[in-house]
Amino acid sequence: MNAVQIHLALNHVAILGTIFSLVILLSGFVFSQKVLLKTAMVGFVFSAIVAIPVYFSGEDAEHEVEHLQGIEEFRIEAHEESAGLSFALILVSGIVAAAGLYFREKYSRLIMFALIIVSLAASASLTYTGFLGGKIRHSELSKDTLKGDVLHEHVHD
Image 1 (cartoon, rainbow, N blue to C red):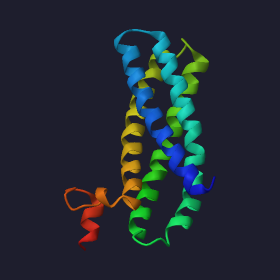
Image 2: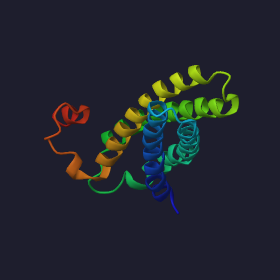
Image 3: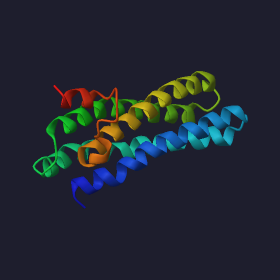
Image 4: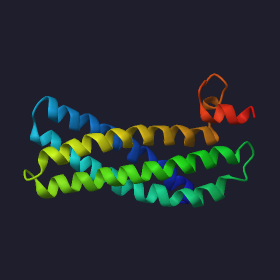
């Protein structure tokens, strides 16, 4: 597999893993089920681990596609800038979740509150980063119908 294949295959795992783990975490709170809370924490740790090769394959993936017809450099740059924040947030989610698994009951309320906050931010950031990544190659996402988009304003400058 080359960097593009690794990046494209695994980015969906990291994004969806984080979002699904957040849903499971919130369900664990609503239904007071520790097994759901633990499952969510494992999901966050797994997603953070998967995000590592995704993030580090991005630069090589960029070099493989930047010369292709129809690829616009500013879209790659926007995706890359957003990826830095997303990577940091998903790693923090994984670390907080690992702390929750390690400390179990000792700091559970504090850790769970922190995990909800950081995983909400990570989910939003990852979703936006994925959207920007999709716009690199999927012209149907780049149409002018997407009002309020940062890239939309750049195209018309």
